[in-house]
Image (cartoon, rainbow, N blue to C red; front, side, top):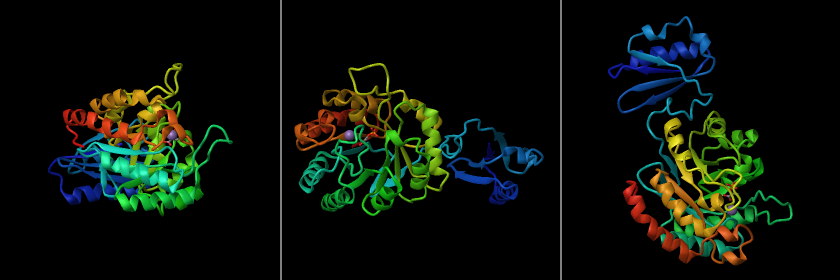
Amino acid sequence: MIIVMKPNANKSSVKEIIDIVENKGLQVHLSEGSEVIIIGVIGDKSKLVNSNLELLEGVDKIVPVTESYKLANKKFNAEPSIIQVGNVQIGGNKLIMIAGPCAIESEEQIYESARAVKQAGAQILRGGAYKPRTSPYSFQGLGEEGLKMMAAAKKETGLAAVCEVTSLEAVETAVKYVDMLQVGARNMQNFYLLKEVGKTNIPVMLKRGLSATIDEWLNAAEYIMSEGNSNVILCERGVRTFETSTRNTLDISAIPVIREKSHLPIIIDPSHASGRRSYIEPLSKASIAAGADGLMIEVHPNPANALSDGPQSLTPKAFTALCENLRPYGKLAGKDF
Ligand code: PEP
Ligand code: MN
């Protein structure tokens, strides 16, 4: 439940309530908005049945929160969260472009990608070093060697960087090199991994599971946040449907649904959603129009020779043209880029 304070409530009333709640063994999440203070209560609220909180000074109303996710819930944090990723803010009034290859393949490949996406206007470099491939015989990523290459490219270009993690060892290594961790679709309900990234203090981009409902996705975010890391960014990457023309089906409606249910920013990945480079531009435009905070797009210097996801990767030239074509859409949506 949440306790909504009156606009003129003073600090001592807030403290009195926090003390009562904490003395019952429950956790408090304080949200100080521009208008009102909201005290979120986490735990078994039946412990408060006889506390008559609504009669206390400064309390406006008590609102039950029926959803199982609390920290990720908009009721707990009415204002949209802005997450700092290196020198980039996700969730503010800028459209964030995350771009780069599916996987880091060589020093030359990641440098070339980084320079190209930076020049086109991207702020964050992507590149996988631990690849969760469908086949065990497919390229699995360069691991720490790849991260070292990415860190060097990041240093040269000034871009922030994100890399997927698939195990505790990967988390421990990746935090030394990147500004944001990614939990991939296949690991969205790997609760052990969610808790481990929740114990770090760097932002986490949480992709939606292949067949996950939005409530399951927000509960996965809650796993990370309940470990103390509130810097979570959601990423819609298409869900599995009966359609075979595209790799997945991009759920555009996830954007307004997330806006209604959560304060967390949302990024759209049209590359994995469609699996085809020719669909990326229209899906990007739709995502911006629906209010996405940013896009994640796969770019490879030579898609025909990419070790993974070549058919959905854009060349640097095509990515530059895409950014140009998206700028007016960003403007219309009130997000410069
Ligand atoms: C990726 O972004 O590299 C990736 C593997 O995507 P997903 O987890 O969405 O399949
Ligand atoms: Mn990929």
